[in-house]
Amino acid sequence: MHQPHSPLLLSTWSFGQRSNAAGWPILARNGSALDAVEAVAKYAEADLSNRTVGVGGLPDASGRVSLDASIMLSPSKRGAVANLRRFPHPISVARRVMEVTPHVLLAGAEADDFAASQGFKEQELLTDESRRDWENWRAKHPEEVSSGPIRNIEELGQLAGSGVDGSPRKGRNEAHDTIGVIAIDGRGQLAGACTTSGMPYKLPGRVGDSPIIGHGLYVHPQIGAAVATGYGELVMGVCGAFLAVETLQRGATPQDAAVEVLKRIMDSYDLSEDDQVGVIVLNHHGEWSGAALRDGFSVAVRSGEQDELVTSLKVMM
Image 1 (tube, rainbow, N blue to C red):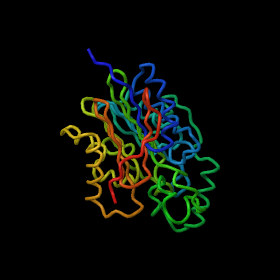
Image 2: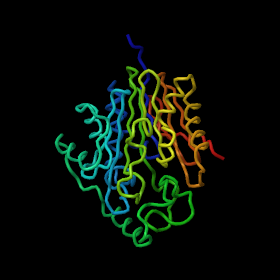
Image 3: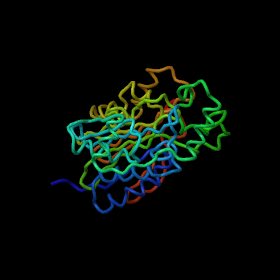
Image 4: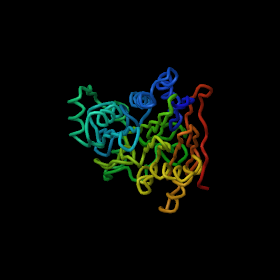
């Protein structure tokens, strides 16, 4: 007989706190971690104030929005979609991939076709605000085919210069990146989700770490779960989420596992002051920690006793 656990929900960035509110009632009534993380991700995908997830996300260099997502229970139960262009909830499409197909990842036009075949409702993903920002960016960067140095939208307020639309930046929390969500429910089941509209003004076709199992998200039911956020290419080079869970398996604490991922990134790349990665790690006992290369990364924590943003450990000086 399983011992009861205290449900816990963890999400990346400050907007994760309001997104958590959509998933917590599921855990509070002894629902599943899988349903909870999907609900959190879906809220973020529909949140028009979030410019890097779902509807309203900033487009690629061609002016088109594409969405990526993954969801996971275990190495054998996981699903993902990449470069989805016609459907607003890639996290739910990813779950359907996991539940009704033998595959892990569907990408591009065929992923949209799959979503249509499963009865998901189409929606225009590019909002007027994101279109205006793209037009302003294109006017200032007529020769560029990708975002170049605009790597970490979550850090825009900390950097000098102008914002994603070419206007003055308004503050460090003006915008954020991928939302990653991990949870443990009252039965001790772990689940994770990750959803994003990707790097702003990216090269069309670019896919980052979010929908790649083991990079932006990894869950092992007997060990733990991890999500990564920030500049996806850095995470992809070290298989960040998988590395965190493997480090847990070797007996590390969640904090040591998160730091190990960041140290591996620091050892593997010549990092610029713009580069940011944040990691959250949760073990199967319900213990967790978060860490990031630089200041600015917060973890939204929701439990029976807690609903707050927690500043993560900064690893890079």
